Image (cartoon, helix red, strand yellow):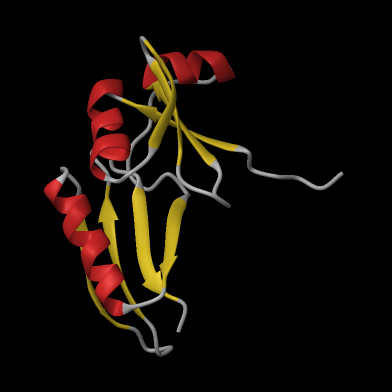
Length: 129
């Protein structure tokens, strides 16, 4: 059996804020909504996204909840056009994201920008070429 990422779970400081960002503003469809936990669909062909209280997520994994800065992971959304990159970036910022790197032409021929969600998780929005 090969490894699959069925659900990506993010430990967040405020589940309601994260739910508003990912479901209401960025178009995720809520599948489960419980106090301290939300799971939503990000669309056909994508993994599910779970939002779990930071402390509870750390406790569930049996690790310390301390940590900051680059977490060694980023999420990438590949779109078909520069206009789509710009639209996703605008939508994310309007919903509370912070621009980490403005969208611009890349040396490899594509176009991409970076934003951090309200909890600082990094997203790269890019064209394939």
